Length: 116
Ligand SMILES: Nc1nc2c(c(=O)[nH]1)N=C([C@H](O)[C@@H](O)CO)CN2
Image 1 (cartoon, rainbow, N blue to C red):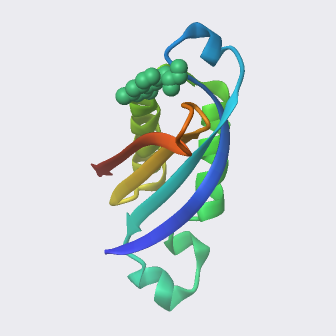
Image 2: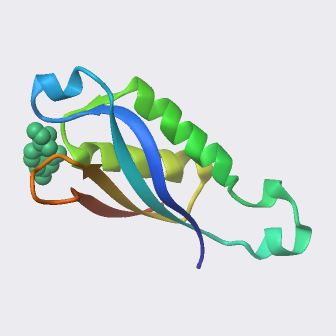
């Protein structure tokens, strides 16, 4: 399978278990690998035959700006389902990082893998 990767995508969203944490948006970082078959696009050279990665980033930023999640796990599932359903991806591997949350470590978060 072929893959589109999006590294260190900064996104603003309301995320956290305590109410105070969800009161204001914070920056999270996404690393995304999107499985797709590029064979048609490789020959046609047409954006219509692949997933437009700019559109993916735009939709993720748009939806996460509107939504609020307690758990990073729930946010990760939401992003995976968006990419699978709206962009017809074959699968999605996602890392969600929350930087600067706990003292003594750079970032924490989850990785999640979903198949379409
Ligand atoms: N497995 C998880 N553990 C925790 C989460 C989470 O989303 N998944 N979140 C928190 C809090 O939001 C914390 O990051 C800040 O108060 C704690 N543990």
